[in-house]
Image: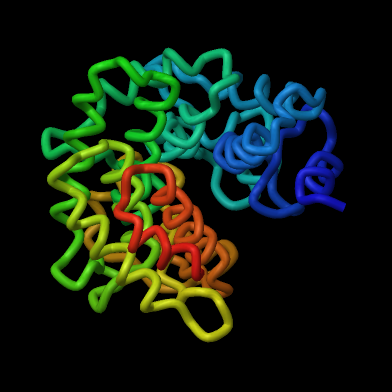
Length: 292
């Protein structure tokens, strides 16, 4: 049975998809399931159609997409805290994931929102992730998808920011991965590729080399995707000065949690390397990527 067949049967037809069976559906996970559906040509499946409606229902007044809706998530979340205003607000990283859905009815509104909130340095902020490479790559890709003749100024700015994040050895170093993060490097690579930046090609080569050389013997990459869990009324997690590491359950609020199974990390690297094959990357590096 294919992954799509498994997912399409995982929940009720109007529930969206969630992080795990025990939690309510959210627009972020549902967007990623729909991205798989679009990649497989299954976007016309009735189950996918329900998913598009689910994501569109999370559109907020500011033009962004929230992670949760109160009437869906409150029965679960209210067992932990009485108010979750921040989790019901729009989140830039969720908006970037949803904006990549070509069949989403509110996509143009999301793209407008992304243009509004791009930072002056070319990056985008994130809510659930401390690494800005993640939303920046997804935003740049969404803004360029299906627009070959458009002015991609936002994507070029994102590419310049991302290229500057890639070190001389090809690695992106972050607060949580100071020796180098394969996860952040993968999304920086995607941002540079999306911006089609000629002067960024050396950064692309370095990033590809770093990612290939850091692959583990089992085929994966060392976990480096850190997800953060802001408090229920914490609208700006970047302002928090201290985060705990690795707490679980109710205690996870205010902590960052590592992708210990390396699934997020490995999938992100493979996706980034795959994009180098059709993006004008020198043939030698494309050949190296084929070895992964």
